[in-house]
Image (cartoon, rainbow, N blue to C red; front, side):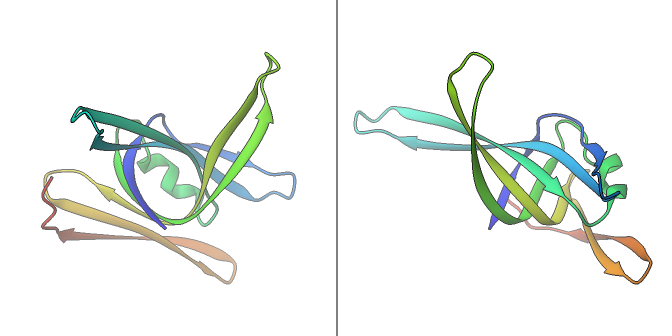
Amino acid sequence: MNIIGRLTRDAEVRTTSQDKQVVNFSVATNDSYKNKQGERIEQTTYFDCSYWISAKVATLLTKGTLVELTGRVSTRAWTGNDGEPRAGLNFHTSQIKLYGGGKRTETVQATAQTGSNSTAGKGTEDDLPF
């Protein structure tokens, strides 16, 4: 699955009890449609995202950055401190594309190698309409 949205907060790196690092961040996506009465309805969906391949990418993931994510989505449910049921969407990210700086696109894709992780950045021109 692919989603495109903006980061709602700076990314955070956390270390698990097995000494693995994960980058956590949140992305908001926007959609709009017209209802039966012809009114335009704006809808925002929030995703809690995780990226396990390389923690180095966290420095690039700052609030407001436009990103395209590839990965899989899962749902989660819990009971809030107020006793009310809650639900959320998790996005397990496998590839991150950063959009910014005019039409310059930077692709960040990490590949696991024996003993080390590396982040590859690639700048390309893009014909996106926005």
